[in-house]
Length: 305
Image 1 (tube, rainbow, N blue to C red):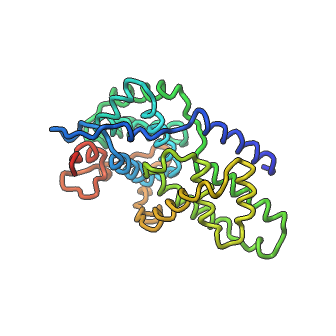
Image 2 (tube, rainbow, N blue to C red):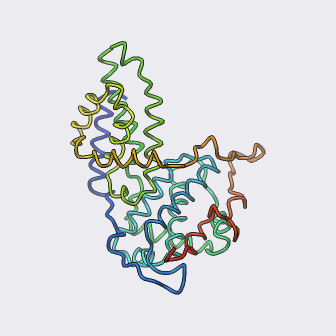
Image 3 (tube, one colour):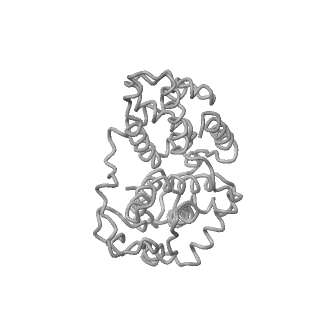
C-alpha cells in the first residue's frame, strides 16, 4: 500500500474507535460485596487479568495469533459496557463472567482464525461446568448486545499502519542512519507491549490508536524517529504529550511482566493435524494446580482473596 492508502485506512479506523468500538470502565460502577459463594458476586479486575492470561495460554498452545486474545477481550469489554440484561448478569456473577470470557475467545477464533475450534473443547476445558447450550446462548447474547459489530480496529493493526508511515517517511529521507534502523525489531517490541497491555483493566478504556502509538514511541525514543512519529500521529489527531501516561504505563508493565514468549510455550505435537487442531486435557486444571490454567479457577477464586 502507498502512503495515501495507509492514511485512508487509519482515518477509517480512527472513526470506528471513536464511535462503534469504544469501551467504558464498567468496573467503576460495580459494588464489591461479600458472598457466601466463591463464584457469585461482582467481578473485578483480577478476574479479567486471569481470564486474559488463560486466553493467551490457549492461543499459544493452539499456535494461533496472540492478537486474537485482544479481539476477544474487546468483545467481552464492549459487551459488558452495554445495558443488555445479560451483560448486567455477567458483571455481577463470576461464574457467568468466565463463561462469557471463554465464549468471546471462541468467537474471536471463529471470526479471525483460519481454523475453528469445537465448542465441545471449551466444555472440556471448563471441566463440564458449562454445556454446549450455555456457550451457544452466551454467543448469541454477546452478538446481539454488540449489534454484530465484531470487526473493530485493534492496537496491533494501528501499530502496523502507523509504523509503516514512519518507515515510509524515513525511506524518503534516504539517510544512511535511517536505512540501518531495524523496523522488524521495533515491530516485535511494540507488539509485545500491546500484548502485555491487553490484560490491564486500566488500559482497556484507552483507544487502540493511543496504545499503538505509545508502544511505538517506547521503541523508537533512542532511534531518532520521534519527529516522524509525531508527524504521523498529528495527522491522525493524536498528540504525543496527551498519551505520555499511557506510554509510562506500558513501560511499567513491560518491566514487571513475566509473560512467557511463544518460544517458551510447549509446541503442538507433530502428529496433530494442522486442519483439526485441538486443545488437550493438558490445559485443564486440577485441584492442586497452582498455575490456575483452567478458567474454573476464576469463578472459584475467593472474593476476599
